[in-house]
Image 1 (spheres, rainbow, N blue to C red):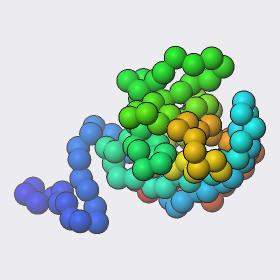
Image 2: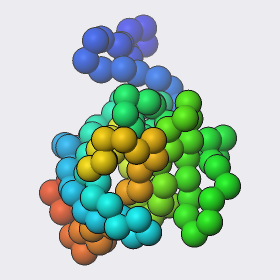
Image 3: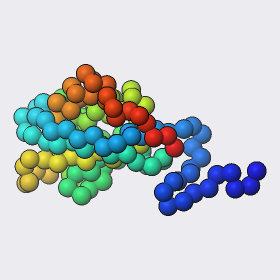
Length: 141
């Protein structure tokens, strides 16, 4: 069957062996960080199949991969090009449990001088309590 799967500028088709999922719409929450007490905003946006989960902090893309993990006490830290995102383990675990394979996770710090940011804990609490209510009408790729 020739031409059964096509790609366009709106839809990408990459055969990865399984259907992948992303969030149906953007989720944005602001909360206080567990260790530093600083305020940060987390915005999760849908992403295309095969893009994976990744963080964006101060215009730097940091893949959610063990290859970018840094040694840090009490939390998991991901680093790239001098920027880092801390306490990512709870958010990434929640996304994995919910079946979210691909998403952009933008972190905005309340402190414009920080080269490192910690993900706010209120975000995890709300995701857990509300189970992504209204946000897990997944888009499947």
